[in-house]
Image 1 (cartoon, rainbow, N blue to C red):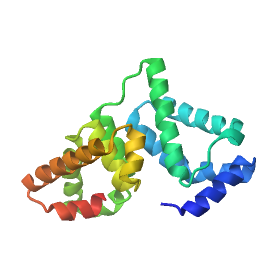
Image 2: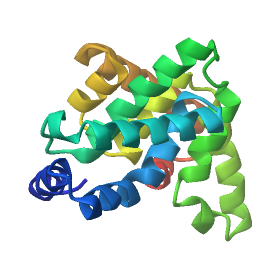
Image 3: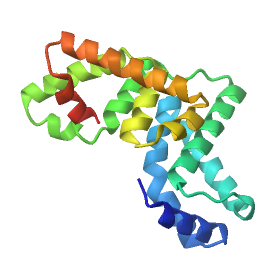
Image 4: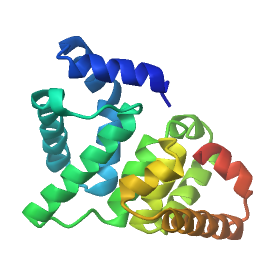
Length: 196
């Protein structure tokens, strides 16, 4: 994660109206925001519109926006709230487990490396199946914790759950992955080294 001091400095510079700081924030986080948006809905246009609305809102209300020491966390929480509000407005259903799975697997940086060998390709296929058996919320909590490196407290606020619920959700997700993977006959720590 970014240095909280540098995040605060960049954020405050943006809040003072600095266009370069605003552009830097956008460029630093746009890919992460797109990736996170796909965990919530498969509607690409809704995600892009929500991100555009978010950044427009930030620029127009920059002087009244609160301070933060984690820009990524602030943006993720804001985007999640905006997407959920837009989904409710448009009565769009959240994405299916299959589309979430495609988005999660598509973003893991290890995928290209694993695809280099046939046996590793088989392992990715098994891993996809194991992740596909997780609920949407379990996939989201794993992504936030291990891919985006958010703390449990940050996840609690992002997902609007209490701390124990986040812990339970994470524990159940990992336990389910462990059972599925061990039943397939491969080592869970080996898989986790690639997954996380």
